[in-house]
Image 1 (cartoon, rainbow, N blue to C red):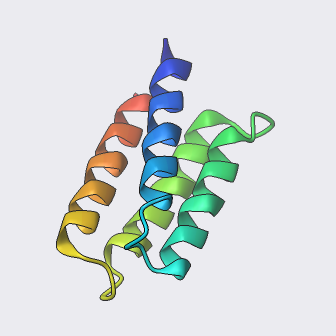
Image 2: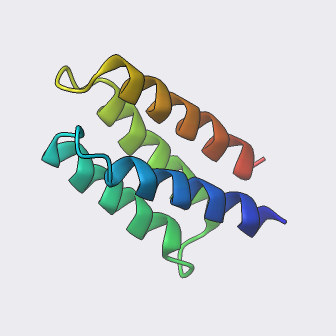
Length: 84
């Protein structure tokens, strides 16, 4: 059940990354986060904490639109529930 939630988070991050209005540095960070989440060699809580930190950085980027920032926050919230 947890993996389905993680897959949903990854899918939402991929959808956001594919948005043409997203700055390239944000896309790169989302890509990095997806790679971290898919690394099953690492403990799930470590992956979640790492990606939560990356999403926090992205949400503080002054170059992203408010609706994008809101989506990043929503993804971060969903990600935090995966680890609980």
